[in-house]
Image (cartoon, rainbow, N blue to C red; front, side, top):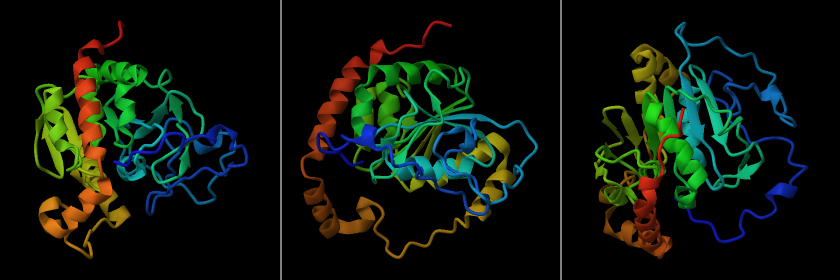
Length: 290
């Protein structure tokens, strides 16, 4: 959800000495973030894992999942569901190129596949939230409109639903997003709905940031059955018991919400203007000719 100051991403192209990628292993499985259609060893400069790779959790066909990566992406939006899905699916982490890029938390990443290399027909198209400038990128929106028209499931976490909306993929659907962005969904013809995970036909959206794990488990159960999802939950030891009950505006209360508004500053007004412009343009993004 964080907006970056202009120029904050400058200098990434010169980071030649950053040979060790920021990776994250799925608990008890050793599946790295660079896993998917291409192995980690296929990426120059990636230090290979020494741990033993466990077999898949199922003997079914592995679903094809494309997860969008982009500069300024909210890392946990992507990493939460990726960690759930990677041991059981062919996960393609995709962007325009495979250059190093910076996530919202400063972790440096790169895609496993380019947009052009992404499979044409997907079981899952997934978009995480982050810098909302991506929803004005015609290359990205055309790609999403194309793959989303054929994907078995079109999905998102956090502000990713706003990006799907800009691509014209949520018109007439119920969806959710981060609490600070959810009301913008109506600009794209979607119906905002409360919920940690919201499903409307083949659209599945998760709430803000940490809802990505819940979303991933719901999606995994849909793809491969509840037992596989439960195995993944157990492997991750996902049994949340937060130390504070302040994870929604209602629970946080007026004092914390007032502090939150002061911290966010004018970002909300900026988002509304960006969404209004994107909504006016969304009709131009249509599937590519086969």
